[in-house]
Image (cartoon, rainbow, N blue to C red; front, side):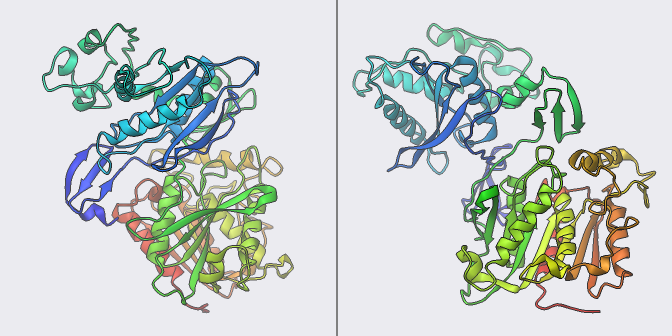
Length: 568
């Protein structure tokens, strides 16, 4: 947020900016994905520390083992990214290596290395050579089969050809995928039009065979004439396997269900690790809320200036139609980070089980369990120190966007029932672009042009029946709180409500209807509404810099800074 105001002194488009204050900004999110056993290929992965002293790490991949006595070839893989971005732990490189390991039946070590400009060359080569020596330390054979990728593989192979380095293994082959080789004098396809490449002149390579390949030793060249520099990174084990299966249900740009029952999520799960944000000073960490059901959350703590001051507490539920996203993805991590900084609140961003594997009411059950876990800290003796030491349990808010806003509303309705056994009160709830719907169109829904909305009527019509097969009607009170027979809104268990809607959101009029119904319900609290002109559903998750997103964050922050309950 701050560095965007600083003069940019160097830029690699889409990849990196260096600001006048020397802050390095990497616009591409570091979409971390945890190690796992891939359900499609059976490939297992785990993270390791290769060299503890210099913090060199790697991700190991093991194919599905059918013969435990068979020795497999070893692939030492080095990811791309112009020496400045990416890690082996991002979704794209994790998926690519998973596919290679499955197809080739090899063991793989995908190495992380220090990035420029903070760590200029030769840091990357030094780290990778250290990692290769670490791999070699496991050899009990005269020769360990190994192959490795990109420009660094070439340089390490050159180095490995020297008898002096003392590498205890031999290299059988190296595979170079779209290698970064260049020179000061153009030749071959160096005059190829930039618009045909996703990477411009500085990154041109052997997608179309050029003369560099003729200079590089005796090599096999595989030419692909229809794709760009990074096309292999669009692959995933799911897409490789499921593309052959018939699709029986689809939410556009969100999810597909295949005939074999496999669920394919079309948006990458871009995990970002917890950290201390260098701009805002907000710290974050991940916790297990309920080990039995594996409910997790990310905690956020603003920069503390007065350790004795208690801060308002926000329990946040992310959106995603109940089927995608987590608090650990870049958009939600950044959104909550900025909100915590602006409002000066402690936040618990809750993960919950997703449909269709876990249909409704699983998300509500997980979210209520998380809220009760938060409440267990109200006397200062809970398991989490950040909540014990910094949270003011007289100022507890629920917040959420889209399906997360729906969860916040339903939890507040549950909290209004004394028999729930919730040991804390709720001061307020903030509903951002809430997912409310119904079987009968209201307001502009019937004639609203679909092309103006990111999420159109047909999309929303199909969500609830898909995520809640036990009661698939769009007038279920949990998705239509003003439906006939729904619990009365007078029972809402909080004192303040803020509803945020967007002009070009097809669900905008549902937000207005909720605001109006709550206003005249007899509920003894204060309800406000804020509409973003020109905004679409979830616009704040795409870019936190535009003025609309800043205004929304500031409006929410003002709401969360309320010191005491207000009554009309």
